[in-house]
Image (cartoon, rainbow, N blue to C red; front, side, top):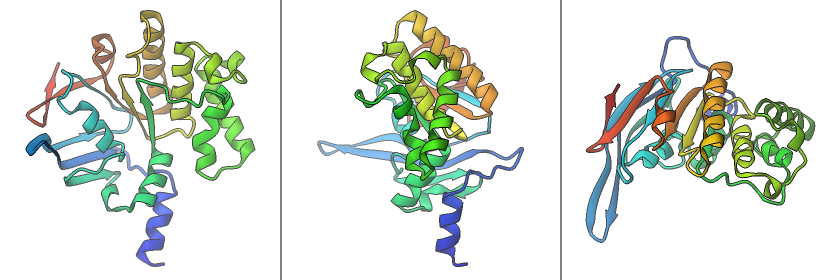
Length: 245
């Protein structure tokens, strides 16, 4: 089997992770933007490791590169320099189509805005990643129903996204992110649009599901109550990670 075919098989299979080794190892990651002739270094040879099941909070002021780092970790954006290894394989070596398949199988995303399709039901929205991966309709439906029940939406499966409350919509977004049981969940201000009660509910779900599913969790947040729940907290200073207790 040639390298291209071997790479295809690896991309379309779940991450094969060895216990005790890092799930993610980022090395020398840099991201530079040019704005009106000015060179802005957002990430500057940043390096870190994250294990399966670990929880990491990225906090700090707006504009320091938190979301940029999350997008790089999620392979939504390629860095200008560096390596990004998942279970020892540099995923930045994949082409865009291979990277999209890898992302679909391995990474879940939750954003501040839920990005649901308003005329689709909670169930239909949650089925999307599994259908995109090539699974049949029945397995996709079963997986979606199971995770929606887990996040407390058993009685809202057939409601359109536009008929749900803000807290319910964000729980659908969480279910959609986790329906394929990804190795890592990346959350960017997941409770930024919610009131205190719904924020607390999402915080609890994130930590419970991290424990139940064994996934890694990286959350960008201004909410220090959420940051206090994770095991490791960092900020970005001069483009590099700085840890704090």
